[in-house]
Image (cartoon, rainbow, N blue to C red; front, side):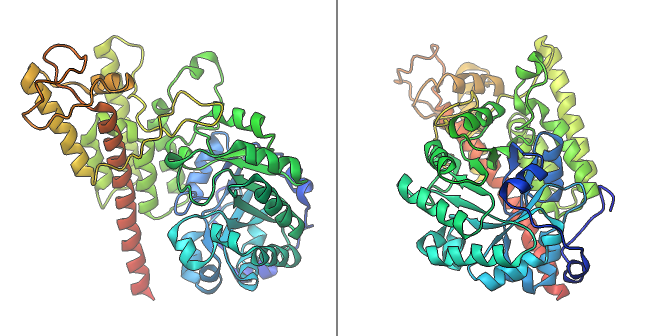
Length: 479
């Protein structure tokens, strides 16, 4: 194999693969180079080209997306469409959701020759996991969890690991982690949220619970939660004592999150300034390791969220059905051209859009890129959010004779949003006493920028979902 040779799961290839010495916990950890920074398993998102992109920028261990064990074992087309790797894609943990030990082992045997360990997902909190009785909902059936881990530990040629969530009570969390360790898990990843907390914007991760697990077990521990920047990662490692730190959603918005500054000048740069160059690199990885364009579009929307707020006309490129990697490179070139133009207009050395999408404040080590945890879901739809902001601009233009720029909106929002009074198209509350300049329409800018964040996020997910449905329909027709 060369570094870029594509590899897919294949039962015949596995049967002929030479057996390796099965490593125990710290043997495995040292053999992988004692990784510190980890790319999380993310359904349809931690696919091969994205993993390779993050490896360019500080990630030292990556997980595949969560794979459905039963489907992976029994459906060749599902295997081909959900899993691929290459020789350079290491260290690698392949993650499965499962609730039957035999099924888990059968699926894992199809990939054990292509990875460093097989991981059991015990953390998915979504409704589909509840209906399927897997992920975090196995926390209600500890004997089944034990049986799953024991079977994989006994039957596989590679170590089994587990990714868990915490209970509300630290004592239950520690007992749970120790039971999984005793069953044979060689590495534990602990997401410091309960299963009721289903996203970064809805609650903080509890680093103290992760620290308690680290003190109680003897295997390597990966900490997950509240990591939105390189500074957060360092703070998490210090606070928890964990052996490594994992990021999920924030890594989607900034694939170079784990790449620390190399000098003082880089340390001062905003992460979104690198988005165009990262998109160009991602396009190169997609060319080398093709994946469905639904995944590609979803990544592009997230990487460029801040830029698309300032230049919404460029969103049309990502909405095109025939979009390809050359279009991504052309889009990156256009964004950099516009940034240079803005810099010249402002007499600045460089320009980048204001950081708009931020996760909630961290329990400690909070980065400057955090907001107060508002649910960014008030928009209803992408078009509704954009119309709302357009109406606000029109109202202020009618009153003042000039529309606020994107920079002015961001500047006001950074100050907390000058007023709470709403402005509708062509109207404003003349009796508002907001403390803003005389004659200025009062804007609830903090809320409206959150709305546009939600719109961009929704558009990314909708576009990706449509692409995936189209691809699944094609697969069904081929069957």
